[in-house]
Image (cartoon, rainbow, N blue to C red; front, side):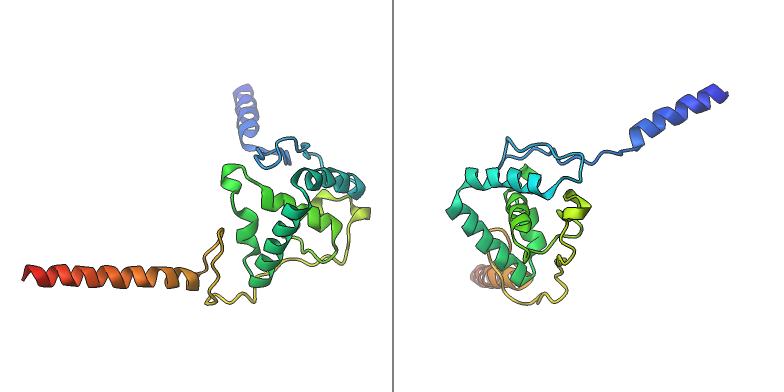
Length: 175
């Protein structure tokens, strides 16, 4: 009975314990990205890796994405911007954020990431953490990756009104 319990415990723990930190997700934006599954790393190494990404994407594209990122941070939709496309394996916003985080002291961390990739002695201890606590929920923000609540209402309101009006006309015509 003891053997059975031991074998059962080992099998259960094998399927329920995940001790790996893997950053080896499918990345359609950067298929040749190195697998960074054993952090922390020296900051200089990470800077070199993301410099390759910058070279691959080009200066103009990276600056356009930087402008998007700054806008998202300013408007309080940075989390939405970061996660845009990730469900399909497109991590371009995530890659851009890490590049600028490594190369600019003014880019905030998102929780403890990407700060947890950097070895302790290389970390910037003055790094700011992103917070959307002062986000205006009623400000209208419409981008190709995000529509705020106010923007959603702005888009839906004419559709609802015109549908109601058309329904009313059809109803009146039937009488």
